[in-house]
Image (cartoon, rainbow, N blue to C red; front, side, top):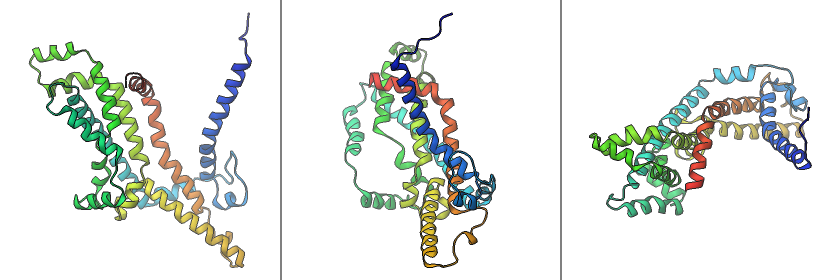
Length: 298
């Protein structure tokens, strides 16, 4: 019985991969351990892998906060609606660009390409959104992100690889262009559609910038913007506590309950991150195939 021979290259390769995997996973392990720790214990003792004073109080307080639940609802709605509309409209646009008989096909391609190179800047963008009535509107999370040049080109490249005979056969049977698109093209494009959907879905889930600069209504803030606000508040409170301890003021551990802003921030970070991480295993088989198509044929 012969065992597997390990070369020096294999050993170094596995060691580097293990180191890379550990450096990727450790921040999540630390955040999880901190979020499950008692706030006072977490401030007194260093946390490496295991919680100090195990408790679910941080998560209980988060889910009892109606502001957080509303933000979570906004994030889920914008991710679902924004992703569905982006994928459908991008695919529709890309399918039209595959038609050589489309009038102005070159113009439309450059029309979406030029804004990719040149942006108007923050102030023109804000003025444009205000004139369109998007400021303090839910649709500011959706409408500005309905298309992306890179995604359209990837979709167009994929559609061009599909056999023309399929479309010709469908048209002989009486299908129009839109019915061919819905009944033939989309079902055959699941890998690339899933890949594009994953890209834009992750963007919508993680985006905090739009809520910070274009929305002042607290009821319309997504969870990532709320998390960003918590981060700012946590830093300010930590600075205040540090200054108080240096001046001898009695603000400090005595006023800290079982939870602290830092432990709540860690719990919020876990709750905001886990749902989008859970999507990856279900999309992986489509994701790998879709990325390979875009990289080789693009």
